[in-house]
Structure formats: structure tokens, C-alpha cells
Amino acid sequence: MPTHELPSPSCPMTTPATAGGAASTPSPDPGLPLGPARGAPPAGLPWPALLALSTGGFITLMTEALPAGVLPAMSRDLGVSQSGAGQSVTLYAVGSIAAAIPLTAATAGWPRKRLLLLAVGGFTLANAVTAVSGDYPLTMAARFAAGLVAGMLWALLAGYARSIVAPEQRGRAMAVAMGGATVALSVGVPAGTLLAGAAGWRVAFGLMSVLALALVGWIAAAVPPVPGRAEHDRLPLRQVVRIPGVAAVLAVTATFVLAHNVLYTYVAALLEPLHLGGRTDTVLLVLGLASLVSIAATGALIDRHLRTLTLTACLLVGAATLTLAGALLGSSPWPVHAAAAIWGLGFGGVATLLQTAVADAADTAADLAQSLLVTCWNLGIAAAASAGGLLLDHAGPRSLPWSALALLALALAVTAAARRHGFPGKG
Picture (cartoon, rainbow, N blue to C red):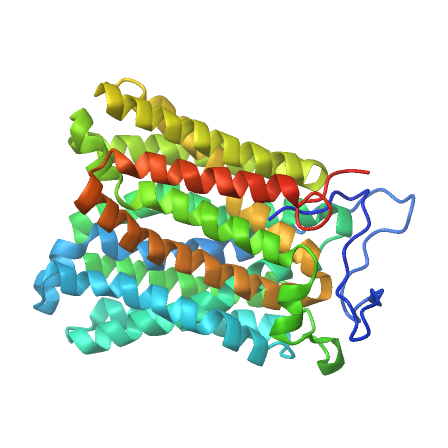
């Protein structure tokens, strides 16, 4: 999986500009819930629907990350090197980058539920092919196809969650819908790797296909229909980027994700000078469990304190990075697990924060703005793999935290500056 501040409910929502430059006031979408009447108690969250969306995020991230834990067995079965099998992750990311913007734009008018069912059905098929294929090109084609539907699904999930709740519940709804990805990262991927070790990597992919098929039925039964956008309501991509606040959120996404993944991708190499190379799994478990706490806190606070939460996330991950840098300078391993906990507390809710912020800024163009964010997120992951590798080869592991810290400082500065649009404060 694979990354925004929401204006607080008391602030006016930024709306896209019309061709003449004046702000337009969007009329309610037919078929979308308008929320309770003024003065009425807020309705409860539609938990079955939101948990179905969350499971979609879980499947998406599990499908993306599972090969990393089963590369040796996967490469043996397919008759290729581990680096060759590792291209299954690369092709998935390439598919996501290639699909997010064009497919989201092309399907903007489609009924959202139909599109959601097609995307989850795509995961059912792609994971089933991966589970049974003994042919390397066919397996890589299935991985690329999975990436295509992932790019579209990531752009769809956040807008769907926002559209089925009252305006004052949008942040919480997105936190629930995006929580599945955090659960996959912290618990699902390690569990899937253990299952693959015990029963074989094909069984793990087969179970992912079965779960996706079950989710198709769950969505059909529990998720309410949402209409697509009428043609006259859709903005060209160039206008979406120019909506006040969107560019700021995208800039924070790119820098934050790049900083996080420079560390995360090469965490094993980062721990080797501290003689913790064999404890990478423990460090990542601490990070993952702290991320679960973070997503829970984000869900509880996001609708009122999105700006504060985003600033805090930058500061927490920055503090964790500085702690790691200090540990490497002194070659002392004792602060590493504390740094991992702080890192998880800062990072766990970031995807929800950034997606909420860009959706609020883009308003009626939220789906296309989400596709831009998904693209920035995946480009950040890809760039981190390349940049981190160069740093590791030419400057050593001690250079990684300092590079990440510089990027986090930039993300913090942009967030702080985007007080009016993108990450607005109250009042």
C-alpha cells in the first residue's frame, strides 16, 4: 500500500474554482447521504460497510507486500533468482502508478459500487493465478494486473468512505476504511509469511484469493450504492492540481513517504551496525503495534484536530529518526525499540491524514485528487528504494536517518505553511 489534513468541521470547506476563477458551491450529489438534520443527533457509523472497505485495503496491502516474505521459495518454484522473483513487487508498484490516474479519470462516471466489486474481483483473479502459476511471465503478468486494480482501489476507498457518512464523520470513516492497510502491515504480512513458511507460499496467495472472493459477497450485501460523477461535475486533472491546498498535500505526501521508506526499506541494513540485524522482525513488530495505536487515535481525533495530528506525525517520526541517528553515532542498540515505537505512533495514521486532507481540499474532485496522491505515494516508495540504495552503497547506513530527517523537516515546513489551504487551522 500503496499516502493530508482535513479542514476542521468548523472551517469552510475549500471548493474548486470555476473556469472564471470564482469558487463554486457544490450542490448535493443525488443519491449521497446528506447526514442528519441540523440539531438532530448524529447517526452511527455504517460499520459493516466501512469494515468491508477496510478489508479491501487489507487485501491490497497484503497482495503487495506478501512476496517480500516468500522470495526464496517463490524463486525456487518459478525457476528464477530471488531478484527475479522480487520483480513481482516492482511490477505491482508499476501497475499501481500506471493505473491510478488514468483509470480513476476514465471510470469517474461509473457507479462506485460496481467499480469496487470489479476491483476486488480483480484481486480474486490475480491472486488465484499467482497461487497456481508455474510460469514466470504469467506470474509477473498477474502481479502487474493486481497493481492495476490496486491503483484504482486506493483512489476509490477514501472517497467511498466519505460519501456514506455525515460530513462531521468523514475523518473517522476514513480512519476505519484505511485501518485495514495498517493491520496488514503490522500483523497481516508477518502472519502471512509464517503461514507461507508452514504451508507454502502458494497457499498464502490462495487464501488471499478466497478472502477477496468472500469480500465480493460482503460488499454486495453491506455496502450502499454511490453514484459516479456526472460529466459536468468532473474537473480536468490540471485544474485539480491547481485547487488551493492540493499541491501542498501532494508535496507533504511525497516527502514524508520518501523519508519513511528510506528507513523502512533498508531497516535491516540500518540495524546491522548496532548488532541487531537478527532482531529486525522484533523492531518491525514494535513499529507495527504502535501503528495500530496511532490509527485508533487518528480515528478518534481526526475530525477535530487534523492539522495538529499531521504536524505531530512529522515531529514524532522526526524524533524517532533522530533517535536512530544518535544510536548509530554511539553504536548503542538500547534506544532502537523506543525509536520504533515512536516511529509507529507517528506513521500509523499518516495515510488517513493525507487522504483526508486532499479529499477536503479537492471536495467534488476528491477521487481524482486521491489518484494523484496514490501516484505520489508509490513514486515515493520507488524513489526511496533507489535513493536509499545509493546512500547505503556510497555513504553507509549512518547516512539514512540524516537524509530522512531533512525530508521530514521539509514535510513539516510545508504542513505548517499550508495553514489556509491543505492543512487549515481552526478559525
